[in-house]
Image (cartoon, rainbow, N blue to C red; front, side, top):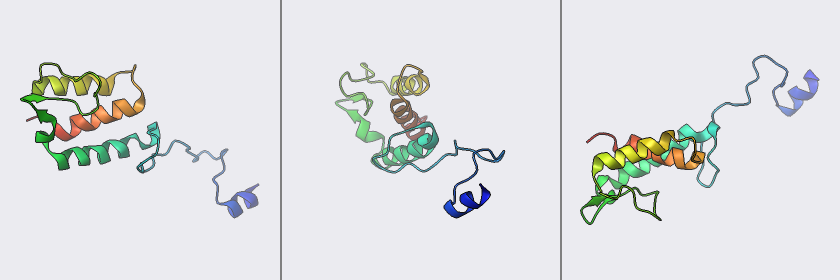
Amino acid sequence: MKRKLAKTGFKNPYDSDYDDDEPYEYNSGDDVEDGNKESFIEKEAQKIREKGKAAYFRRGMFRCPYCTTKPKPRDGIYEHLMSHARGLSRSADQVIKTRAEHAALLKALGPI
């Protein structure tokens, strides 16, 4: 068994040091999963920082770039946008990509 694993380069799943849940790098086009969520958040936050806060301020209101069908928050106040992002980043009802996108928005824009 050891010889086969040594030839293939795979780790022995019965080894106590074996960890299949190691985090890995997110690449564009990949699905967002628990293993690459942190990498996705960092890359998405970097994109948001490059655009700046002004990109999310239109017609005198702040809007979430990820909630396109129903603009959130409706009143357009910055604190409400941060509250919206905080709520969805922690919500168990949302898929992991939606939670990660809103966590990135919260991380990038942060406090004023």
